[in-house]
Length: 386
Image (cartoon, rainbow, N blue to C red; front, side):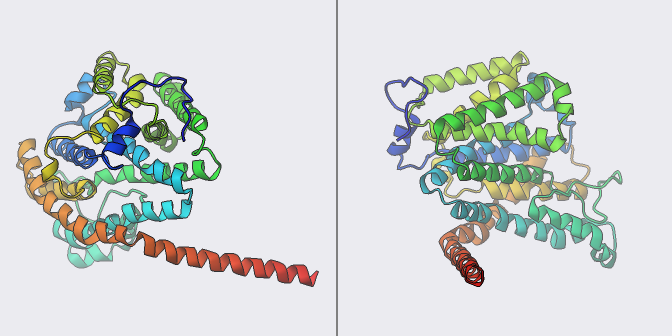
């Protein structure tokens, strides 16, 4: 049982008791994820017509946050909250890794390959033979399968002649995988099972995050990749903290309302970097544990499919119909095209892959056991020989 290390506990419902009420399944997380993925789609549709700085939240927050980034932070907070408990309970990093791989990569592989061999030939300005002969750029694009982002395909360009970014949303997956790896490391070295140490990790990352924002000279000394990782991992780690202390932290609409007011005020006064990692994850978890409107319409988690697929759809619309000047119309058409494809991805790719977790885990466990046995025998042979 997680101790009350914060030294306080409010009477009434906690995140843990709310999870117990819902059978350990937050009833609202599918809606929150779908809303976040749709927000990313809307943000990119808006960005296909207007400058990114025209995002209303970007202006309101003084350039700290836009709606697309907010949706990404929502995903990271949810991942930290939902993924950590299983790893803490089992301690089996191999099973955890298999689960994460099967969640991320099958649909990603299908989308990347389909984009390259189906959409690319339709949109390219090159003859098909020349398109498929550009092995170098095609190979670069396949790096997306490994979450190593490359945005361009041969001859796929905007009406103004500039290369088109085919699927700009994929960049976050690299940092999501790094967050999963960081959580596995925390488990292996014994941090994840010790609440005080989990809190220390979050505080360290939080201080680095705020320091990078408040003191740009600090961020300039770090690599851009590390700065980006810190700026996303702090929300993932905040979700892990909420999960770790779920028996202590209240499930409270009043607290959620207070967090929302603090977040809005901090964004308005240019202090979003201080408040957002504390407020956004709690609001996300509170919503995920709540009964949200529209649950009867969300029978499957389509969020990952929407996130992966909307980019190529928007790219195709922008190239094929450059005269469209209504971002709402672009968003509507993209949504109508993306949702059915996401549904197909869920049925034929994502769910079948996840359903094979135990089979894959047993197979890999068997191979690891065989390797271990072989190494033990080799060591014994060496000992006898000496």
